[in-house]
Length: 138
Image (cartoon, rainbow, N blue to C red; front, side, top):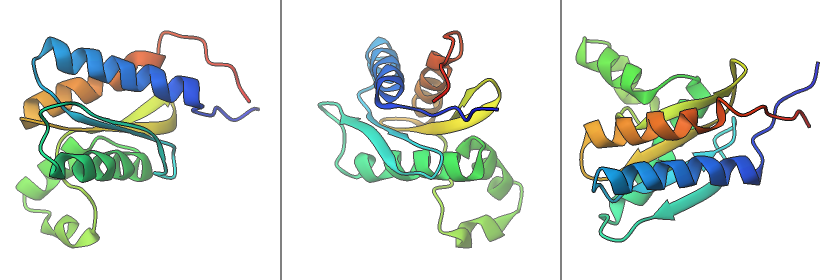
C-alpha cells in the first residue's frame, strides 16, 4: 500500500481554494498549509490582515495536522470544561482543519482573519479542495 503525500501542487490547490473562499466572504485572511507533521508547505497573508493572524494560521494548521482533527473540536472541548487542553501548548482556536485524501490525513490548513465563523468556513472549503480529485500515490 502506498502512502499519500501532500505535494507542493496540492498545497497550492488548497491555498488557492482558501484564498477564493476568503475573497467571496470579503474576509481577508492569513492561510497556512502544512504536512502531517505540521511543517509549513504554503502560506499567504492577504492584504488587510492583522499581523498576529500569520502566526495563528500556522499554529491552527499545525494543531489540526498533529491531532488529526479540526481545532473547533478542541475549542469545544475546552468550552465544555476540558481545560487541560489549555496547558497543552496547542492552538485551541477554530480555523484549523485536517486535509484528508481517501480518509488519510495528508496535512492541514489553518486560517486566521476576522472571525471564527469565517476562519472555519474558509478552512473547511480549502480542506475539501483535494477530495474530488484522484490523488496519485508517491
